[in-house]
Image (cartoon, rainbow, N blue to C red; front, side, top):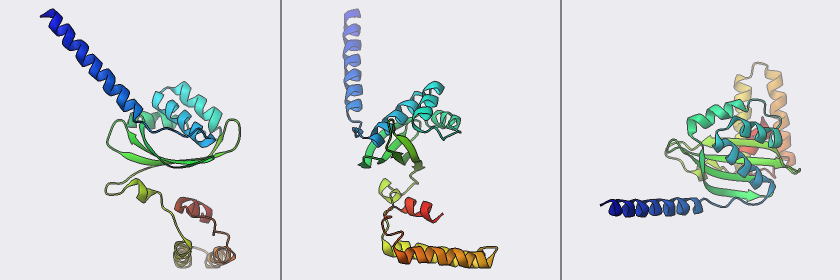
Length: 198
């Protein structure tokens, strides 16, 4: 009977080991670019849950972030993240999807870095995907018509609600002139456009 139990345990252990290796192998590869290396370093530090590793990550890659301790609390709430997929990637920018280890919540993230050795984070964002939406819904690409509609809507709200009407008119004239001159033409990402307008 002991031999049978040992054999069953060994078989079960082997199966679990194979399953673990298979699941680890399914994690998508992270590109070997400055943005990809930064993502890899962030995931390792964040998932470690270790204060020292998080502090070392921010010191090296994101030295202007002063509230890194909030990430430790966030890590404790989420249990860390599993990388689901890389959405888009180029040398200095990477968009990705992750899943919380502690829940079924998925999120879309973006890291933009400045070319340096090591790369320095210029922009980092992580947004939970609301129920009924997909990662594709969160990576909003915009065109010229959309940019014009957004500016028209912002101008209308400025003129209706801004406390100083003269200032609202100046701001409206400025963004409309920038739109006409083509200052926004190269922006196709909704979040980048919102940041530029802000």
